[in-house]
Image (cartoon, rainbow, N blue to C red; front, side, top):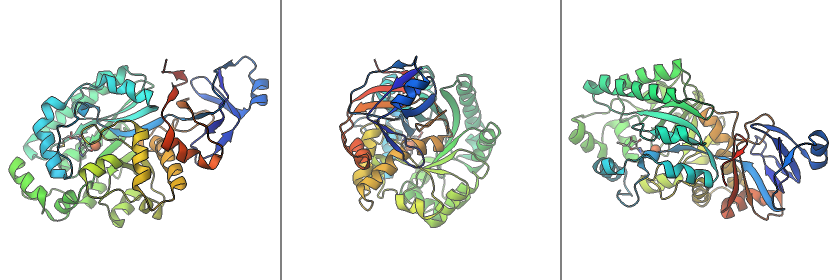
Length: 406
Ligand code: MCF
Ligand code: FE
């Protein structure tokens, strides 16, 4: 077994406990957390990993929503308006799409140990399955044309079969419904049957722009022309409420973006036990609003998780960059309180959203996904904020107890 004695252990457990001058013993799993003297007595043969006396140990980050296939984009797409962006994606799609091996090793360097990868085509399947990263692989379904349903469903099933063949301790296949406006309700129903039978995690983009909300509520606005031109479709096939209702039997369910939700949608999201995934940078670039984080707590504490989205709507896949943005975006919440909330949502909150409850926090018997970095902080109360502001150099990224940084 391995032994580490960092200055601080930020557990990210439900009480956000932080331990000073404690030691931790782990193999693939976290075995014990206690005072150094006690640990030495109990585990005299443990192998000590040397760390500096100003180090912080915390759970590995969980990026719950990322599109690795779109990693080739830097400056090809239009930002500032959702429909402009959508048109630019459709125009550039072919030369943007790639396999994304390099991105996975960069993510590990930056302290991410679990991702929820939204896969449109399955091109990044091998990279994900071969990486030490823990991956929830969301096979995406998209298409609203009735005469295409059979073809799209067959293609979806083939991708699910492929990803299932790669399942392991660190790789799980899952299902993504692209969005309420882009997937036919019949197709959603069939795909969710498969997800529910196999108890696969389910996710969907939901209410990310005012144009989406207007189209779903009244079949009007900028989507009207878009649908007429591309698909010869004149009205929306669903409402936000009907869409959420389709997910009633889903477990480990999450809705991404949700910047245009009202109280009633939140109540329905809460009733089906779903998490909300927040992608602050993507929303800044494509939407007119950001998520109202405080509204999630007004109900029965809807679980919050964080994602970077893809490089098709972000400049970075580093979750610490995303946390910085979120810290400066949500100005109505006191910064220390917000930072703790954000670190929780980037770890244990993410684990809940993806249905990997054995990860995401430093607690006995959890899988040892942990990151270590040097940062000199004097008081417990300041750690979350200073970590988000100053963390630059991860020295160790442990996934299942193995350091993947050398
Ligand atoms: O989350 C962002 C914005 N909303 C919707 N879709 C995507 C995002 N980033 C990438 N996408 C992908 C999506 O998975 O864009 C493709 C889909 O496959 C085309 S959307 C017509
Ligand atoms: Fe997305």
